[in-house]
Length: 115
Image (tube, rainbow, N blue to C red; front, side, top):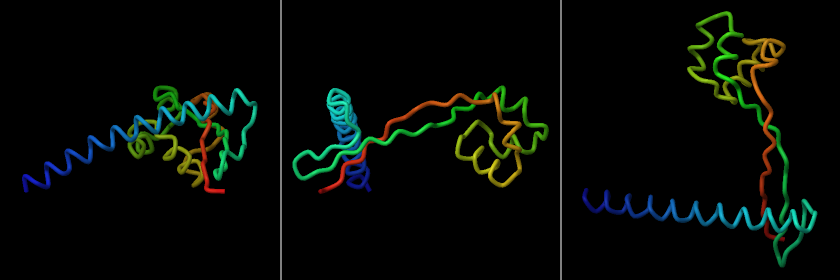
């Protein structure tokens, strides 16, 4: 079991290093594309594409005050955007009631495909 724990620890350390390197590379690629003024570019045998998304970030207090039923709040426990979206899609929460409980954050996703 010690070997398994040791291997797990090594892999988690590698994962942290890889995630850090990925974040750095992502920032460099995003900066390069921004400098070029392009959202899609072929670089060597790879196609780089930047996709912009808007994500809702809910304010826990405002959302809680908007929900009339405490049972619904217990389903969320905190403002998880995917759970809120699911409850709105299922008409458990009216979309109109959610107005003013969130801010929209623009996020840029990086996609790299082999060309």
